[in-house]
Image (cartoon, rainbow, N blue to C red; front, side, top):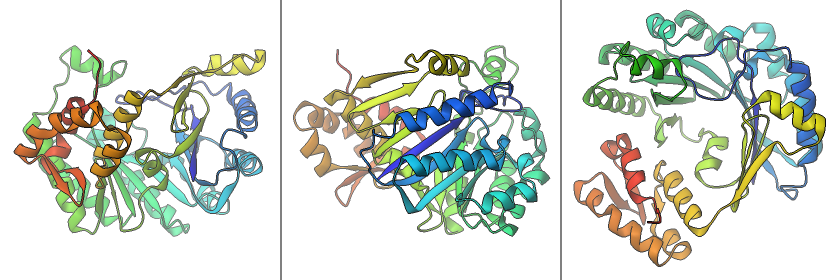
Length: 377
């Protein structure tokens, strides 16, 4: 089974925390759609007729497209690839794009899952992030999607924001639970170079939250969502039983996927490929029939690093037997040496033949991942 990712690079405004590739210039939208169709068709042999179990429209802001344009892309995909009858088809949406008319048209298509970028239910936070919607618009968008018949909805939240108190974060989590959605993705704010928040941080206009407060927000998130019946199946992701994101889970379980559009990535277990992060260069490549991507063949070291990083993020952890069978010798020995301090501290535990992080371990997972990576001297 495999997945397909479609990168829609358009945004009406740029959020202060986001480092994904996007453009606020919509003039090239028709040319982009034409080039996207060509890419989808040109690469149809790459998966060898493997069944597609998930299609994900990300961005950018896919909901700035018309439903007819989304349908056009889906039609091309269904014509060129063997898409499973029960494939998960997700569209990322901004709350202020979700009118009843748009949602009803989307529901009539093959889209069966929405990922709504609420980010916060606090108007002050939304303003600081340069989000276009209000807290009430976020709530109303989710409710309208439910009224329209969508029964598999994910929402996004961000914590660790400047000046965000534990009480304000608790209100966010409680509001998310009250909406009775099936999936919640909650990310700690990262100050990515090139973003407005990064510049504010470097110029002293904002300060990072203390680690203790950030950890308490993470702990509260985990406790409250699990109490509400959500399963914490990946560092930043929580789902009602059986409603994990099939698309994102494919990334963590190292399944094949194709990425279409500027900046999109692809993976076939042995090779990684990434498209150019420039809409202008992407369009020029199709105009002149020149390459618009780069790729690399993964070494044994790369494959080991990929496996430990992706697996450690999940509740299923790193399988000792898989690691031993596929990365015997120096990689396995390196792993066992490097995890010893974390086993002693309790951040990592061996459970049912797999190495898994506890709550404190999940919060410092970046540090643990950095330690277990294999890097040649």
